[in-house]
Image (cartoon, rainbow, N blue to C red):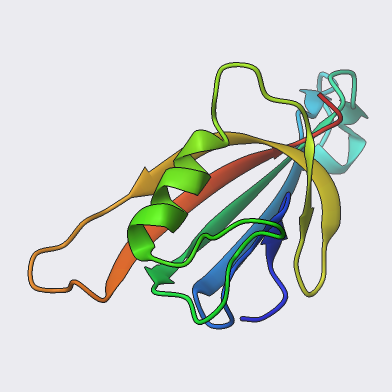
Length: 131
């Protein structure tokens, strides 16, 4: 997948394998006595939430992943992405081929695997909003 960016970090083409975009609402269903399901009264009181999950593999980059910095190696990319969760986040832009929203990072999950020094699997969970 190409054109995936999280704040100022631009993923190398092919590193992001999947972008899962979820928007959900908590619907309160109130069935009517002695009525069938099409007569159920539905309310959307609690608003809507949005979540994005990125899955892929971090690989050594051929060019820096951030403007004005040197983030090339797998270790540098992992450190940069982990550093985005710092206890004092502000919303940052997330863009992909079909989505452009403001998010905060909920989780960065890095999975080191034995025998595979050239790529590191990752999962990054994002929550949509303005922070």
